[in-house]
Image (cartoon, rainbow, N blue to C red; front, side, top):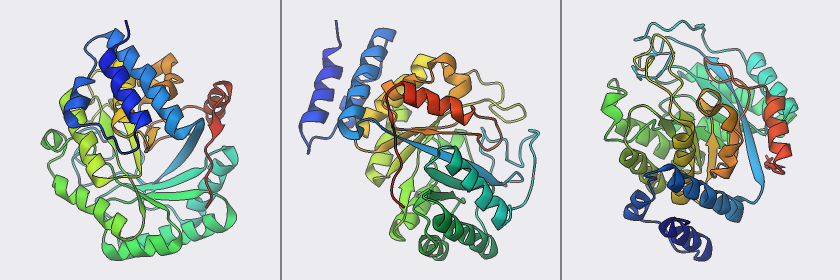
Length: 331
């Protein structure tokens, strides 16, 4: 028999414009068995269809500056605190940033994000990103996003003026679990970066990584902080344990638990863009197409920062075969 609690909440979300799920109701949705997880996923798909129809956005990224990061995030191969084997390099030049974006656009991406390692960028580096953005906006229909670490007011205004639409900065996990993941900066600094981006007129993209050892309650905790911050888009990642990092030996999440995470976030954020990003290939395997049934409205395509993704053509074919549409947006 279908779980009546899940169904009733889904119907309220779809029926009443001013109805918002409470933290207590969200906690009641945490699936205790596979049957409840399937009910949650089924209703999350309906919520996605109600608010996002069949539109699916596709985001490609470039690892624009790699390695030697002074932060000690336990999952990250780019941290100088870890012994992972990755390529290290300074910020790529303007031409490389532009050409990679144009290549992704030609392959089918409608969003492009330039992502850099490190705590923050200096003024000259921000200027490089701004110039690349101006060229990309002139030569393509890409929606340009950047992820450059901690953000100052001055840098945020420059990025906005150059044509950057969205600033990405993950919280990674709940405030209560963050000290288990990173101790080199304070959680409030991440929140302030999101506020700084918003104050400059940028859209805000922020989410986290599941499978770090956090509890379901902490997943809900992060979801409601993102709700309080009113972020525009939520990237959901799953831990891909990298050898040499602090979490390199942690087991992968079970696929159904990963899908239930997406579904729960769709219930809490019915109108927001939810994009499934890193770790989906290793975590979900043959269940990758299920991310849309679980409520996702977007997909990161191509490679990630230090790991390979799936061939873009395979993802485009998957989206097409499911009868979903290109989520391209105006510049």
